[in-house]
View (tube, rainbow, N blue to C red):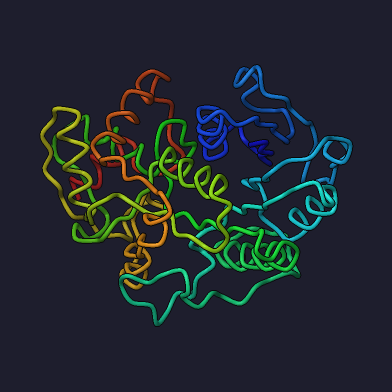
Length: 318
C-alpha cells in the first residue's frame, strides 16, 4: 500500500508510520519538518504547514491508496488537505476523538452510534468547549467528500512511549518512587487507555481491509480503575505504594487522568467494533513497563501537569 500520513513524527502519527513500514507499506509523511528529523530516514517527507494553509508540496506529489489524517483539528485543515489531494487518494482515514460525543445521557458500554455534540465551524480556537465540536465538523467533511471511502477512528486516551503528555507517564513515574501516593480523585474511577501501538495496528488494518465506518480505539483489554492502574505501575516498577485520597480542589488543574464523576461513563466505551476489525490489546503491564523504560532513558524531564514531590508532600501533610 502507498500511505500518506498528515503528521507523523511526534506520537500517534509516529506509531502509525512505524506500523505501516513494518507491514511493508510505502509511506510518505506531510508536516512542518520541525520535529523528528532523525526518524524514518528512508521515508519521503513533504514539507508544509496546515496552520498557514501551505499545501504546495502536497499538491505537486503523487497519489496514494490511503491517507491518514493525524493532524487535522479544524475543518479548514481537512478541507484544504482534501482540496490539495483532489482525486489522488483512495481512502481517507481521519483520527478523531471521543470528545465528539455528547456528555450527558450516555451509559457504560456506549458504541460508535452514540449521539455527538453539535459541530462548530465559527472558530479555530481549541479549548475544552470547542475541541470535540471542531473534530465533529472535520468528521462530517471527510464523510461528505469520501463517503464509503471514509474511515473515522475515535481514540480514547492514547498512551505509550513518546507520549508528550503527562497522562500515564505521571503515574508510572510516581508509582516507581513508592510510598504514600496522593490521589486527588476517587480510587474507583474507571480508566480507559489505549496503547499507541495498538491504535496504529488498528489504523493500518482498517486501511489494508479497505474498511469504512467509525471505530473506537480504547483499551486495555480488561476494565481497570485508577487505583488498579497505580497498583499495576507499582508492581511493574517493583515498588510499594499506599494510595491516599486527597480533595480534588487541592490539586493543580488538568491533573493526569482524573475525571469528574459525571464523565466516568466516557471511560467505559465499547471496543467491540474495533476489536472485531483487528484492534489488539497490549497488556497494561507491558505498556507501563515500556513507558517506564522510555521515561528513564530520556532522563525523566519535568512534566507539564501533576504534583511535584514538594507539592505532594505538602498535600499529604495537609
